[in-house]
Image (cartoon, rainbow, N blue to C red; front, top):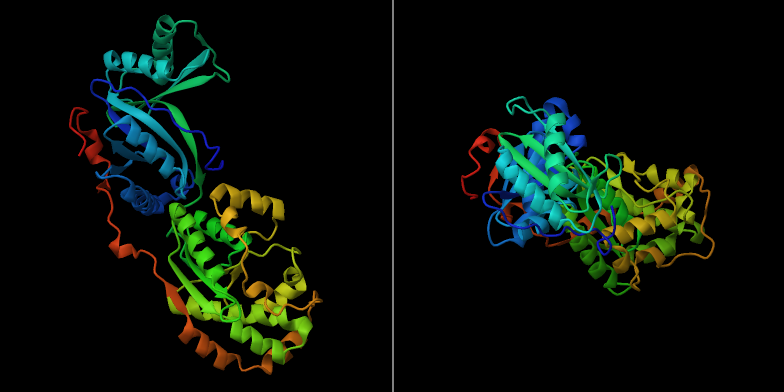
Length: 433
């Protein structure tokens, strides 16, 4: 996926006599789910609807449609806007802005011509036709020949090129309608948010953990963000940045919840009771211990961190093992094999890098020793852990935990949606609701 600043924008198409303007949403992995496919498609439909709802004063109509989603829009401009928004939704592999017409060549020919004229500048083109069923009497190869030949006769200074043309006109015969489009935007792919259960993600204001959380959204998880603030030992700047990160993740499915722990006083207690070289490991064990308690409370099945192997002292295999041992839930590390440049590039693409780059103090740098342990012995770590009042601290932390208000799902209104393919067989002249 390209960055928001450099992403190719759709151009607007001219209006025609009877077309509906439509957005065809293609989903790759969802189509592989066999008997569960309807469930995944319905989740994706709801997530697309949730994404579009705040942007329009009318209700875009969304329905499952022959292995895709079909979004009907009243005009070309709103279709372009909707397509660019939908491309951010996990589970969407590509999005096409299309004209929907009756399966009538007398309508298809002039619509195809104006669509190709609006695609200037280009010199070569081809037609890629697809007939989804045999109800339409002309097969795909013959459609390519007929529509391509007609366009060749009516486009000035344009030539047909079957390999790597400048523009490809797609013609799909689906459900009694013809769809024409030249514009397709790459989506983020993955699975619909909500299809893979809940996770608790340890979310800092740094660069790594927002990317890890985004990758979990992309794999269909509902993400509960858990931020450990250095408050009261540090200002609450990191908390505001984490809220900005949560807002930035909203187009991709958003956080299910966001919890904040004022952790600074517990870090001070640990610093007073633990040898300096082991402080960071004990800090992280306590964070994991709290995260698991929150996960059990929320029904989450795993923890998520932004750790990358060997990136800092706490992320060696020995130290990871010493921290992991304090919890029973699986700990997922989506970035474990990524280097910093790869992580930064992805943070830039999803729009969190500039937020994370702002100066802030947080618990990550609080009371950090000059020479932390890099290859901790698990037995020694557990001996230190056994001397600490961790159960007492856990009870206090769970009481002090603060939830940041995010818009609850039950208050979200969705555009009108149709969950069956039956209605799409209505005549094209029926007006868009």
